[in-house]
Every structure is written in structure tokens, then in C-alpha cells.
Image (tube, rainbow, N blue to C red):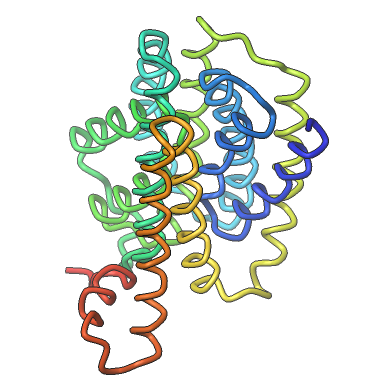
Length: 291
């Protein structure tokens, strides 16, 4: 199972490299259900994996000038405070509740991926975010990260793009700095009450980093929009597995059935112009126009 865990971690890293985020949402289920870790150890270990892979990914973005350091450090500092508090708070919350919360985050992530990123183009690369707003947003996103182990990139990127009007490439590069900072802070909070298997944690992290480097090289070969949407549907299915494990099999089966119906409806509406649900499907699977 350890070998399988490390092997699958490579694929998680590939997803991270291809998508620039989102792959971390698979790390907790991998560690909890394949490696056999308890919920809190799995979340703590995932924070290490997410933090290291994000930091390495940020290096290439920084070299290309796609990081706004002032914004990233302010948001990251607020996120670290929130993540550390979340890691401390997690000791008082049952592992089952944390995993259910993680499943909810998976659903939110999947919907965000299916909708796509809003297209925001602006030349104001030096735009300064309002500090009170960025601190508040950082605290909230950091708290979520510390509690359930999700990197929160799907929350950070829109916040940077919408609040500050940053171009998407700079928002993505800056978000990796933020994610790394708050992931390490959340890990620090967890380590006050949770012991993790460092040998396995470092092995999974190394595998994910290798996968991320491979994924970055494959980016030019795969249609990113199709990959993003496929991964979004896959994350929805994975969330139903967690709901089945932690609540009741009927809940997971219902969630999986709804996902399959939604996927089939989406496919049908893309193929047939007169689909009666085309308007609803379009709202779900396409990004809104920027205001």
C-alpha cells in the first residue's frame, strides 16, 4: 500500500503541474483511504505536500515575473495566521467532521473548475490591493486551509484577480506563494497535537514534486480546458466516495448518481443545440464574463 500511495502521489503531482492547482484536493483521500492514515494525520501530511509543491511551482513563476510580492506576502501573512488557528482548532473537531468538511471543499473546487476561471485582463500589474480586504480574505481562506487541508487556490486566485484586478498569470503565480505560506502555517498548527509518519510524508511529497514537474512539461500537449473539466467531474465523484465513507453509503450513492446525471446532461447539451437545459448547463460550465 505504501508503494501504491507513492505511485498515486506522482499522478496527484501531475494534476498539480497540469492544472496549476486543484490536484491537492486528492491528497487527503489518497492518504486517508489508500495509505490508511487517520483523518487528522492525512490532513496534516497533505499540508506538507501542498506547501512544498506550491513553493517549488512558485519559483518558476517568480523567475518569469509572474509574482506580485507585496500582495502575496500580505495575503500570505494573513493566511498563515488563519491557517495556524485552523490547525489548532482542528484538535477539538472529530476527524469525521473534518473529512465531511473536506468533501464539501471538494464539491466547491469541482464546481469552480467546471465553471472555469473568469477572464480578467488588465494592464495594471502594479495595482495594489486594499489591505483590509486582503487581510480579511487571507484570514478566512487560511482558516479553511488549516482546518481541512485544502490549499485553497480556487479561492485565492479569484480573490487576487477580482479584488485587485491582477492579470490571471500574475494571480496564479502570486497564489502559489500564498498557498505555500498558509499550508506550512496550517501544518505547524496541526503538529502541536498530531504526529505524522515523516518517512512516508517525505516520500509522498517527493513523488508529488516529481509529478508536478512532469505535469508542467505536459501542459503544452493537452487541452487545458478539457482537462480542467474532466478533473472537475472526477473530483465530484471522489467527494461522493468520502460522503459514503463518513456519513452513509446512501448519501454517497445519491451524490454519485447526481454527478453522473449532471455530466450526462452537460454532454447532451453540448452536442444538441436544442437541449432544454442548455441555459442551465452553460451557466454551470462556463465562466461568467468579467464585469
